[in-house]
Image (cartoon, rainbow, N blue to C red; front, side, top):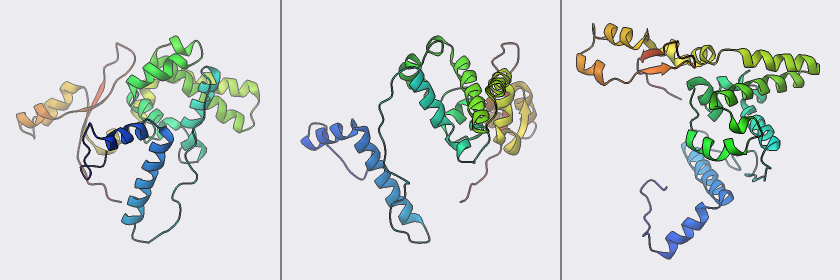
Length: 232
């Protein structure tokens, strides 16, 4: 937790104190925010003082079912509501953004064990893909309502959003596929092409990026990406 800068014996009273602290979500978030703020202030060229975060961590008790669904949709729409993207699925730094762009929830195990059973019917018994489609439709409906469209138009927007192909949307959102991709196509095509200019060993061990469609008859799209340095 402290990157090797501190040590604790597993049987020590101090270790038990830390166990209790890390079970407390509010304490853990406060500690995380403190560490991050200290790092941020230390690494900026322009010195700053005062709080970094807009407000303190808030722990809210939410009832399972409809309230949880509405809360989840509200949180995942934060990037769109802040004007950073139009569609929450285009924001790759959120859990929904990763899910929409890869087809797999980044916290898949926790999502299925804790969140999914608490969703309202029929989502609690639906497939992960069906839940993602319904959430996409809910985003479209909420955006239409915020634009002061009629209930009929809001419902139409939801229906149209749910009809969109998740595979096509994921392929469009995988920006690095198209920006950083050297070779794009089937796995066989990508590896055969790279064998012309790279060693067999390098081609064999290189992990390809891919977008997987839901339709069983549609093959995945693979991508060999070039590495590049990212600077602030």
